[in-house]
Structure formats: structure tokens, C-alpha cells
Image (tube, rainbow, N blue to C red; front, side, top):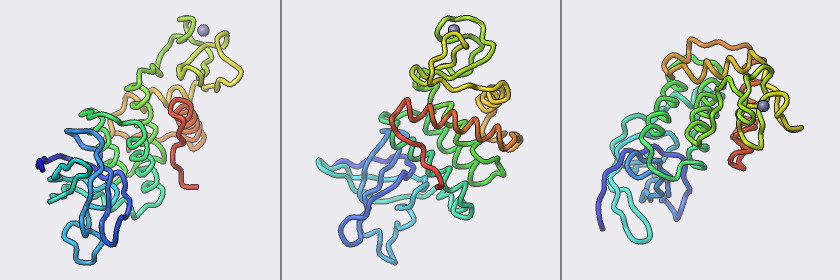
Length: 236
Ligand SMILES: [Zn+2]
């Protein structure tokens, strides 16, 4: 079997046999991978911390024809403190769920962005949804949807009142909106721009009102559902 070393983030896993676990990794070098951790559910298992969601480290993997086995792990960070705050824990889970649904290829920018998002959620005092909302804006951009624009995506005219056309995933003017398009208030649009233009380590300086924060999150999660057919995980 060929041995390979990758940097990976654990997105989740499934228990198999008595003490094994198959974990899903998003790796820098190869994108998504499913790998087996042998005997890792035993109390004294050497790499048991590596089976947990969020774990980020260097994984050495023996790649076989049908399945791949982790032979060693060097943990860089397991973002353990996320489990101290249920809201941030769920936000971080939701981000990794999005990765597991949409990321099919290696993508260095995405890999770095996942780590920045987890770091911010774990170590900074950041407003609810700001991290996942910034992450969603990036995902849409990477999918090719231009979200933050002053012109209607359908007619090209200057935008006054703005609507999100869910069918095309872009912002349109009142004349081009459809019946199921979502209105975007100026405050909400402004918040989208701020999130898009602020680096993760500066997100703690942002403070939206509860109303605007919820509006932005609703808009982005609804758009995600329309674009992918999946729901964003939530606490309820
Ligand atoms: Zn228009």
C-alpha cells in the first residue's frame, strides 16, 4: 500500500466494528477523503482525539484499493474549546457540514478559510452567525454567484431597492424580481458587504443588531438551500 501524508480537518465520522471509526477528512492535498482509524474507540487508544470532529492535524494514511487506514496522526489543534459554547459549537458543525456537502476537490483557499472560521469561533468573542454568514458568502462567490453588487444581475440597471432572486442566486431590481424573491433592506445589504470585506480575525469588531443579524442569516441560509438542496444545520 502507498503511504501518504496530508493535512486534514475531521468533518465527522461513523463508528464501525467494535472499536474502529471511519472519519471523513477535508484535506489540503486531496480534498475530501474517507479513512479508517483502527481501534480508536478504545479507552487507551493512541489516536482517539483524532477521531473527533474539528480535529486538525497531519495524517499519515496507507491508501488501499478499497479503503485507507490512518497509521499516525500529529494533532495541530482540536478546537476543543468549541464544546464550551453550544451556539458556536453548532455554528462550527454547520460550517463543516457545508464543506462535506459542497467541497469535492482540493482547494487551498477553502482549506485556509475553514481553519480561519474555526479559529475565530473557538478563540474570539464574535457575534452570532457572523462567522458562518461570512463563510456562506465566500462559498457563493466560489460557486460563481456575484452577491455584492450595485447593479441588477438581470437587466444591469442600477439597483435601488434590492431583492434576492432565489432562482438565479443573485440580486435584482424591483422590475426584475420574481414572486418568490426575498427583499433585502439597505441595512441588510450593508451588513452583507461588511461581512464580505472583513477578514475573519477582524470579525469580533463587527456588531450587528439582532434583527439585522437574523435577516442576513435567513437570506444566506435560504439561498444555500436553493443553490444546493441542503439545509444549513441549526441548533433547533
Ligand atoms: Zn433589473
